[in-house]
Length: 180
Image (cartoon, rainbow, N blue to C red; front, top):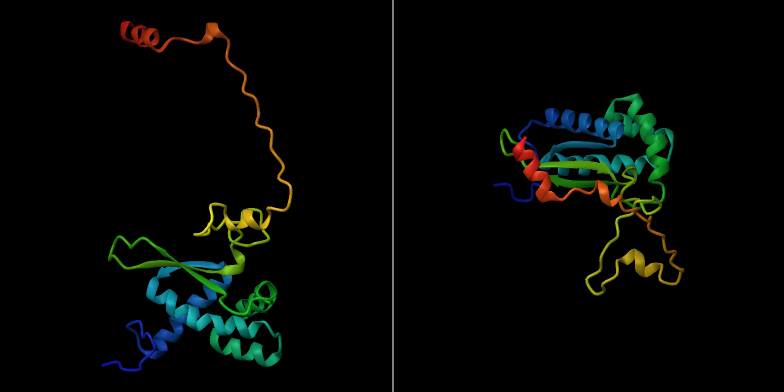
């Protein structure tokens, strides 16, 4: 029985599990998004988020603690550089797990884990903000916030009609093809 055992062992011994999570964290820091199994993604979130929290305060002690977990100088530079700048105002929840279709070979549940602030599709300051729909109203949440602002109407381009002699009737075109 595993009463009170909150660690997902991922079918590995302790040293193997720590090596796996260390490598996954390095790849997540380097690429900002990785695809792995759902169980590994959930375990990775628990492993990586405290390290990202430590990177918000750039001190020698925090660098040493994170280096003890990652053992990679390039990852430390990236974590305490670009990543810490983006997550400085975020109080937590630095990663997002998106479920993917099952893997073909063994039908394992797959997931993509990514750093939240590095996906421009969901960033509020970006151009392509996904509009959330509320359950109560018909307007998206983004449109409700901007009701006071005047809406500019965009003129649609006028499409010119083709000359009539170039238009061929479908019935005549089919008979010509059949006769040829």
